[in-house]
Amino acid sequence: MRLLERLEELYAIGGGPGANRLGGSAQEDEAHELAAGWMKEAGLDLERDAAANLYGRLRGRRPELPEVWTGSHLDTVPAGGRFDGALGVVGGLEAVERAGQQERTLTVVAFRDEEGCSGPGCVGSRALCAALLVPRPAAFVELHVEQGPRLQNVDAPLAVVTGIVATARGEAVFEGREGHAGTTPMAGRSDALVAAAEFVLRLRDAAAAVEGAVATAGRLEVEPGATNVIPARARVSVDLRAPDTQRLDAVAAAVPAELSRTAEVEMAREPTRVLREQLGLLGVPVIELASGAGHDAGVLAAAGVPTAMLFVRSLNGGISHSPEELSAPEDIARAVTALEGALTRLAGSVDE
Ligand code: GLV
Ligand code: MN
Ligand code: MN
Image (tube, rainbow, N blue to C red; front, side, top):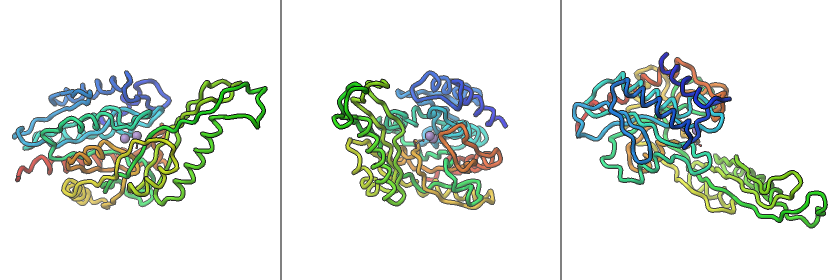
């Protein structure tokens, strides 16, 4: 399948193990170049905006009307998988090509730096939405892997997404006093890393106490960072998710730092209904899931773009942000068919 070959081409960028196309890196640029080539090959009109997001447009018969968009991101976490983000761009392009010319213009977008491995994430889609999004797309439909085990558990290939959880990210900094590792008595120490370690455990307990919440400290920097020096400073990244802002706040109370937050967001009724209908036509169960992962779709939805998401079953227990990430070719094929149908429905009708 051409789509799988393209995913492999993207995966090979940057070497490995795993996909390594961090947001803002030369590898992310390379992925955008590759995708731009595929879009050009498909006869799409290319555009890059001020944030370097990439757009490929299949002009509609009525190009003056608001467009219908699909797409996702091409950056990855360090040692990421083949599908996260890339599937939405490559599968989106496939679906647009198959749909062919409609009344409205069909646009495939590749957003920049969705992962935000050392920042708030969704850099490209936030920049787009912070600028005036005029005219707003009529709809955005993002195809993505589930990144969890729920579809595998119920033996279903696809799901429509109901909404995206509330998130908070930031960094907690702990100060201590550097000193000689061999001569400073334990009783007199102020060790920043010990304080950070106690914080990580408190954070774990705070999230475990709130239904549906999760907390992760995924990055740690220690200064001066020498085996024989007591740590003077420790910086710990914080990533919180919860079904709603209230529950997020309950976990965030354990964090002694300002966090950058996004509220929970619901997917829009109409494009979601169209997706549901497409799953019905495919004869697969219509499963509805909330997303625990963040997505560019959440940013567009919060900016008022009618947005829907289609999830493809993740295998291997749903593992993601890992080279072990896996989805079956037949599930992906069904997802592209459903996406093509949804885009055709959304871009083919112009009754307003
Ligand atoms: C993006 O993958 C996220 O961190 O949710
Ligand atoms: Mn993603
Ligand atoms: Mn991701």
